[in-house]
Length: 238
Ligand SMILES: [Zn+2]
Ligand SMILES: [Zn+2]
Image 1 (cartoon, rainbow, N blue to C red):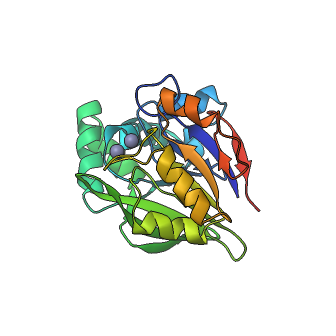
Image 2: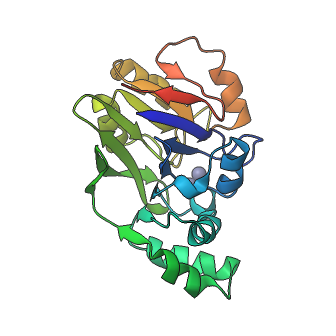
């Protein structure tokens, strides 16, 4: 499994917002600016066929209208969206705000397929969706991608909770929210990542959604199991 870190920062940093590209055609979250950020990395959003959304904050799905428009003009029009039920309405509304006149035409052209299941398959991966705790934003989900030999998880935005612990307990790699130095009710912090690392030492923790001050503190930590990525970095899990 090839994972490209499209973004590793929180909203108010010069880093792109948290988002990950798997094997060139599966994207976890589509923050504002994603299509542009991918072009800057010489990657083409037209190749993305599967988009998994963790929750409906703007820094996780506001580039959907640009992606839909781009796909409607591309020869490969395959669009599969995995999210919670309200996603279909929200994405449509956002598209109408962004491009009022062609919105219906774009949707009729790409015919996005929505999947609201808790377990599904994408190519060779069995994907499971887990409810996490992102404060008042409900629902918020994490995802685990599993093959026979590897398990890779993505927490999305969340504080520490039972399902995040479970994900760390079974995953080889967990890409996790570590926005803060000290975690709160909405986001994890270095304190929570340290406790996950202590309990589940078999799991490599790739921290993301980082505030600048958090990144600075994290870089002082020397621990092979805590990975602090820059935007554009590729991680291979096999
Ligand atoms: Zn959020
Ligand atoms: Zn966020």
